[in-house]
Image (tube, rainbow over all chains, first blue to last red; front, side, top):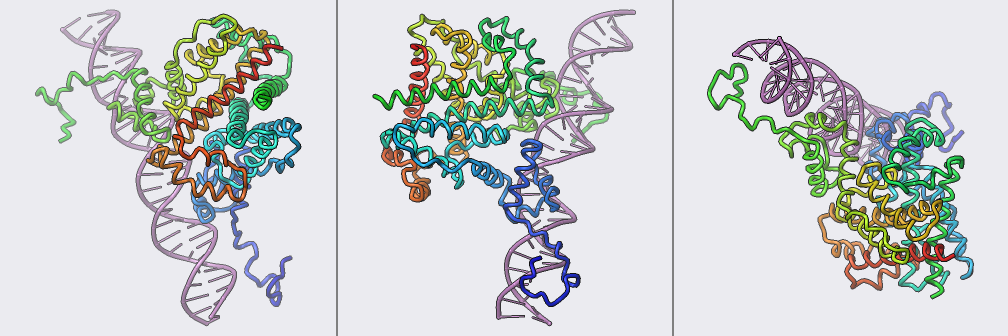
Length: 242
Length: 242
DNA sequence: TGCTCGGTGCGAACACTGTACGCATGACGG
DNA sequence: CCGTCATGCGTACAGTGTTCGCACCGAGCA
């Protein structure tokens, strides 16, 4: 019960409170994320988003310049899911800090697979406040690690490229599975014959994955991410020692 | 003058011998690549592609199932630009071979920036013949390098993730510049004030790039790629020694 | 030679999309 | 009480990918 200005008149005589629904940019962004999570990126249209908010499509344009700007807002909102950057630890403990950020970025992307193309599209040039906070936090870690000022950009860029690359392909893969309506295990089981077919022509292709036939695919992906992350951080650490 | 009813006689009314242009799938793919290179991905529509081939949009569907399939064909055609995989060198020389493949992949992406989203979208699951050849060649190199069978997939995946990640962000950046109609130098010069503004709030953000203000941006990107590639390969090499 | 028939191009149409424009209306300050 | 301004929305426009049925050409068979 608001009752803010003039409670004189009865609630009933007052113009119906539900009249002006009063859209806000925050509502629009939130509804867009719901829709994207539920139905994927190709299902996001201004009209559908409007009806989901009990509004006409064109009403959205009062709060958002166009669809591209809406997506920018959405992406930065997702960046907001990341934990605030860890306090820049002492020099020796940069590695777990950086690894944590990387893992969080990957988890964020897998929670919202539709974000992968957009995030790669703008890369690090994303200028939303949440994205900037994340980038800034990451750079601070590399600085604390001891990378010279003219090198920490490149070091952070290396890590980011790895994370974006692997998360993008993972997200695309998961999106394809989601569209097919199957589970990940069913999917790989169904595709195995075609895969073996292709492997016959190119021996050595993916023979490793045949060995892991019984491992849960989710586990395989996690291991692959950890493996690559470890190698990248090894390479950066080696540079630091030199 | 339509003259549609009765084309009685006369050479002029008779359908010209060059009538049936006979579209082929190869022509369509080639024209699509031309159009994509010239005007970017959002300019590719079936109608525009049709007119470029002196054909109606709907005629294309006789040779290609739908637009998505066309794009798959286009992407694999681009993969065909890569040099054939180098003969698997002796164990010690795996590193230059792998670095060469990585550089070629990046160059390919920068030649056709519009390919970046598509390439990330399907990742390594691309099943076109040219893409498979490249993947297979890369894996062979890692095998020759001495990675055990159950690890070479992960090693190759690490490298590919890095290359895809950095090439995607670079391509997106170049596409944005191309759309703006400016040169890369003009672009960075124009954005510098806004950049410095953002840096004030987050000190330490990109201070490295200010130092390189006079270096050609192209050179900066090349250096960044080489730096990251060296780190990733260092990390993989270290694993090999253990 | 004549006739059918499969492959090909294409015009029209459908169901969508993002978005510009102008009008209505409701809330608020004078 | 009245004007002003912000907001919602109906209409419309220029596109999009794709389907369908028709027109026609060249080849194969009678």
